[in-house]
Each structure stands twice: as structure tokens, then as C-alpha cells.
Amino acid sequence: MARHGFDQMPVTSNGIVVGVFSYRSLALNLGIVRRQDSALSYPVGDFLEDLTFVRSGSEVEDALEAIHHQGAVLVGDEERLLAVVTTADISSYLWNATRQFMIVRDVELATRYLAQRACATDDELRALVAAVRPAGLDGVPPDRLEDLTFGELISVINGPERFGRVFSRTFGSSRELVFSMLEPVRDVRNKVFHFRDAVTPDEVNLVMNARVWLQRRVRMVQ
Image 1 (spheres, helix red, strand yellow):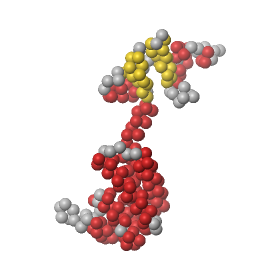
Image 2 (cartoon, helix red, strand yellow; image 1 turned 30 degrees about the horizontal axis):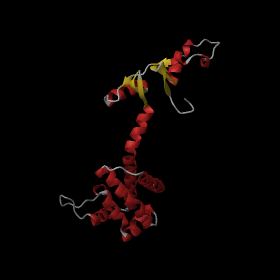
Image 3 (spheres, rainbow, N blue to C red; image 1 turned 180 degrees about the horizontal axis):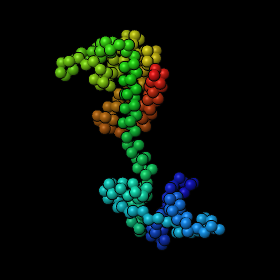
Image 4 (cartoon, one colour; image 1 turned 180 degrees about the vertical axis):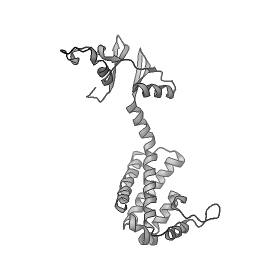
């Protein structure tokens, strides 16, 4: 178990699953070990616990409830075990399913923060916002960065005159560097939030690198 990073292992007898051996089941049954003996001298069968079986076609809710109470669930039945699903498996799945949303969100929040901090006054901020979108759908000009889409925000930052005069205060001196990071992130953001397309590993790395750089800039101006 330690060699392969497993927390539990099914135990079979004549091809039938009779229980699961885990660190928890070992700890719970240590009371049977005599003081003069070592637990390692006892058969595995003395330290088993039962886990719930769910069918591969069962509702996910049933599996999650069992995992919540027991830490793992067996998929299949006693005669045909298909898999063991653990809390670590669920965590890994959820992270892989949501991390692209979280990373893109972090990039957008950091970008908006740096843009906000670059503006010396509220009037300067309103003027920059209005330069990209003079009026909203209601005919009233927006006066907050939050009112702009991420694409519009990039347009505000990327203006050569605006960048040198305002946004270099927080983003640094290289407009080309900032634009080369933010423009691809916008494309990935559209895939993630609007088109629900799969994101490639290269795109994930691109956004992660942008997040690292932007969050470093945030720490520098705080």
C-alpha cells in the first residue's frame, strides 16, 4: 500500500471480496493484538472492514453518501469488483473539472485589481472606462472596471498612450509582455465560460503562467 500510494485494498477469498484492508481498519482492530505480539504477525483477514458496494449504473449521490461516511466505496459486487473510489479520487476529479475555471478567474481578478490600482483618481478611472465603452445598454456610461468585459478591460490596458501613462504603474514597463499574456487568456476564457470547449494542457499552462506573473505584480503593489 505504501509503495503504490493506496489507502485501502480489497481482500478476496476464492474470487469473492470479503472486505477491505486499510490503515483505518488496522487501527480500529489493533485491540485484538496481544501485548507481546506484533500486528504484522496477524493475518490480513483479522483487520478487515466492510465498505458499501454500488453498481456502476448507480446514482452518483448514492456513491458520494457512502464515500462521505466511509472514505471509499466499492464499485461492482462481491464477485466482480470493478473499482475502488476514494475521497482522493473525488477530489482529483473535481479539481481537474474546475481548475480551468479557477485559474482563469484568478487571472481576471488580478488583472482588474492591477488596473484599478493603476488609476490615481476615480475621475481617471471613469475616463479610461468611458474611452472603451462610452455608454451601456441603458445609455449611461459605465464608471467601474467591473462593468467591462475582460476583452474590453484588455483594450483599456493595451492602449499605447494609456499604458505608458497609467497602467505601467502596476503592470510594469512592457506593454508587449502584458498583452502577449492577456490576449491568449481571453481566448481561453471564452472557451471555458462561453463555449464550454475542452482546454488543452498547453492552454492551461499558458493561463497558469499568466496567473503566477500577475499575482506577483499584485504582491508588489500591495
